[in-house]
Image (cartoon, one colour):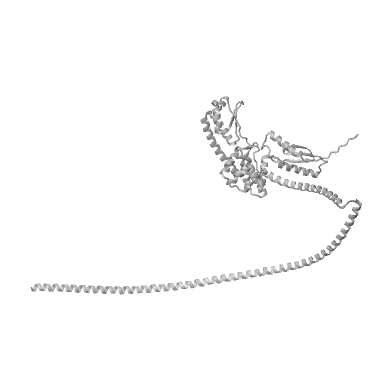
Amino acid sequence: MGSVMMAQVSTGWVFVWVFLALVAGAAAALAFRSFQDRARRTSAEQEAERLLAEAKNKAREILRASEVEAKETRLKQQQELEQQHLAAKNEIREAEKRLEKREDQLDRQFDMIRTKERNLEKAEAELQAKQGEIDKKNEEIGELLVKQRNELLKVARLTVDEAKKQLFARLEQELERECAELLAKRLTEAQEEAESRSREIIITAIQRYAAPHTAEATISTIDILSDEMKGRVIGREGRNIRAFEKATGVDIIVDDTPGVIEISCFDPVRKEIATQAMNRLLRDGRIHPTRIEDVVEEIRANVEKQIVEYGKKASLEANVQGLNKKLVNLLGRLQFRTSYGQNVLRHSIEVAYLCQVMADELGLNGMLARRCGLLHDIGKAVDREVEGGHPAIGEEICRKLGERPEVLNAIAGHHGDIPATSPYTPLVAAADAISASRPGSRRESLERYIKRLDQLEGIATGFQGVRQAYAIQAGREVRVIVDADQVDDANALRIAREIALKVEAEMTYPGEVKVTVLREVRAVEYAR
């Protein structure tokens, strides 16, 4: 029992000592933590004091730098203000000098005005005095005229109305003669000046543009080597020729002429397609309806491509930009169109160059003049498919495609069908006449040529006082012989102008027609 109790007591003390050890350890830990906290707080306070000292030092440095910068800025602003003040003073001094000069000028002008006013007053006084003298003289002249008229009436034994009629008749004759002479003088001066200037412009335009003087004609006949090949073209019972005409829309004329067939069509493009297709079929030798259709379709596609290429080349050669694709296509079609044997596309390019040269000489827009000249005959591309003249057709096409009003007026008015509303229209008309009238450019049928000459002579002989009229120089000139007893020199000029105006109004002709009126006096006497 005793040992058990001792064991229990020793075990209790062990727990006590353990508890005391734990309490002592906890107290030591708390003491150590408080010591650490006081050490950390002390170091933090020292660090804060150090940072505060550094911040105060930096603030002092920043304050000193700001004060220095503010002083420099104030000095600069003060210098700028002083410079501006000095400049303003200089401007004020200059303005004062100008004002002084202006005052001196005004004073001199005022003195001159006062002097002129005094001179004008003197002149008015002299004029009033002279006017009084003139009034007196007019009264005296009126009295003298009344006396003279009364005396003339007594001597001539005429009434006042009869004298007026004779006087007016004589004055009318004299005025007619003077007007005719004045008109002749003014016309001569105007013609000399206009001819000189226009000749210079036209010669410059022609010299600066060198174009070939002949144009290729479209092919209308095809050579065939043998009658056997001609038979192949016709085919059995004419089936080949019918298939060819149906595929191309042309007429094939096979006559008795050996080695030749003719292709006839009003459309130059279809005529070109048929010509190329026939040549290819003749070279190939295989001619039957299926082959004909294949070749014609292939040639038609090639010709359409050629048309586009011709149009593009023409626009590039004429240096006309921004054309609508439809206009380019129509320009290409003009390659296969001729007018009196002249290729219309080459003619249009030539007119474009001439318009540009003349426009530059006159100070106009050369690029716009080129455009007007290139498109002036665009209606001829479809004039055989659409009713109307080519100027109206071309103007309608270009209006739909958005061309400028100057271009539209030049197209519609280059033959005088409508009044010209821009200076480019007469330029196009002049360039068109130059291109059409140069040697070798165009030809016309004999029947039409003779009819034009007869009409020209008929117009000239229809005037009073004309005895004879002769058309010479292939219709480029008409010489008119007048009766010297009925027509004097002044009226001869009037007749020439009236004939020219009537020819312009009633005839259609390329280029210009010169009217020459001849008046001569022949004195004939017989010695018996």
